[in-house]
Amino acid sequence: MKKIRNIIVAIIILTAFCGISTMAAEKEIKLTNKKWYTYQNTDNSKDPVNFKIQVNGTGYVKIEGNGYSTPEMSYKSGLIVNYYNQNWKQMHSSSYRSVFDHQPGYFAVKKGTYYIQVPSYYKVDIRYTFVNVKEKSGSKKSKAVTIKKNKTAKGTLQFGESLSKTDWYKIKLTKKQKVNIYFTGGATYFLNLEIIPASKKTMIINNRTSICIGTNVWKSAGKLPKGTYYIKVNRSTVSSKEDCGMYTVRWK
Image 1: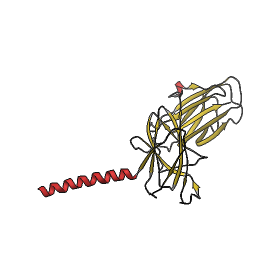
Image 2: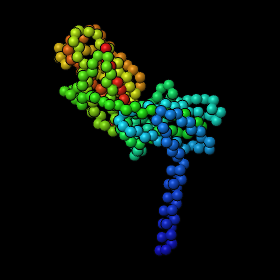
Image 3: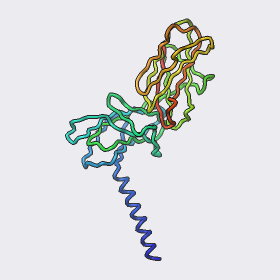
Image 4: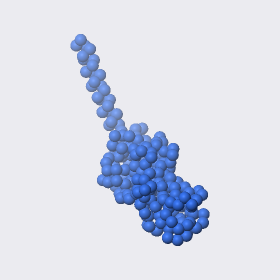
């Protein structure tokens, strides 16, 4: 009996030691908002590096970075990254995301702690920028918020929300005119914009556009009749609730 007890104790100690060793193997580095950080893999470790970030409000985080895959630092490439919340839940549906200094990655956040996990590189340059977003959108069509001409509405679709989550806006045309709607954003998967006339007598062909990162402009084919038009923003139909992102809407 004593021998069995000693074996159990040894297993517990060994398990604890392995756990500590595994945690120690994965480096954790805290980043500072808007400041570049350079990580040098001096011990040629093959373990990923976890960059910890802290945000103090609701908005989005922009990730910029590059990696060097050779000891000579002669080849600069984008970074393969994963986004996680404080419970280590992955914050996008795909297995990885790629970011570059000229094409950042984005994810929407609420106040809390988050992690950016980067696989083994010889050298990593990385930076995050948190932008606070005070969103004013309607949760349904009847509560749509008016966007005035040449004014910008900002919004986020947060990690973990229902896929049915939709943001509603509206514009009011005081005369017959052409309309351009600028849809800008950054997301882990595609965001959609749809324009819907309030009047059933008005028909719009090709009334949708979408973005992942960048800007798309929806242009009316001709002059739209005077009246109210609703703007609906939501995730792509093939997104998951792990996908998230930010967007802006402006019209003229």
